[in-house]
Image 1 (tube, one colour):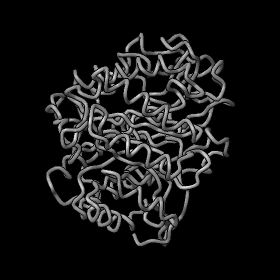
Image 2 (image 1 turned 180 degrees about the vertical axis):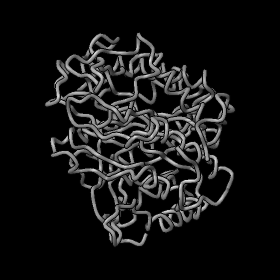
Image 3 (image 1 turned 90 degrees about the horizontal axis):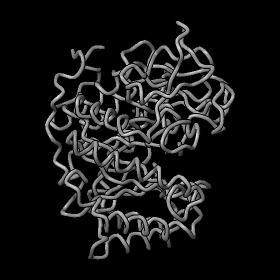
Length: 417
């Protein structure tokens, strides 16, 4: 997800790891009550099946050096098998050991990520399916690798009992190509039976699909009311391609000044306002996620028969991606308190369907999977500040259990590192 709304809003605002590696199979027949993570799956390395170089690790696919870094957090590679480790020349840890990275185009790596979801009690993922990578998109040479990765997700969900669904992302696509490319791929997935898998998420008997890109007059997301209504008409038409449609877009969606946008947004089955980057500052100068709009967002969705699916995130940083000085864009995680405050706010609203941004997003520093606090010394990286590499998996798992159990979530983190 390469869209962040960076803004300051003046609003008011005892575990020891997974208890079991055999968390029960997720009921994929309903989206309701699910805590699902966004899953980019876009990382590639020289020597992997994609043969496309350092995709999403570096701005130069042919080389990875401190000056070309586009990611903020170094994944904890401890558990990855030898065939999943791709050597990064010129990078080493404080002990001098050779540094490695992973490729998302590896079945073992995807399987490992899904095992973590299972072990920590996370329901599954929204698999980002970028239109620019699909047939007809400007980067369609990546399509074969992306479909291979999708099949790996499909297999891993089956093996681990997790749920999954497609999240189309329109970022970077010209307006006149959005409808054609998206609907063509949805037809392919439906015709191949992908959306009827037992692990594919459904709601009301229909396969669920998400579309990220309902951002008003955004230069990177060329959505219009006309195209939006075309997509909604297509996905709501009875037949083989009908779906339960979740929209994702503007945080301030209720305040959109365009009446056509106001109308089509309320035609969606569910809506996720992208909250990443929206923060308020308290009297001490501490940043907190802006949640003051959540109650009214929920009321508006309820009023129109839509499911409100808020976005929760652990913090943020994209200094390397945007070539900023270290710390310039940092929204500190505060040891997990930043994210836990959001779970606390949700429990007061009775919400239990949540989008967690993101599972593997190290480019924007919102990852919750295993990240090392001892990254290579070459380059600048954000860490988990000495906390265990699984700390955010544990927090999301704990928040999921408490929301599902309709338990009041305390304002402070109830488990310990």
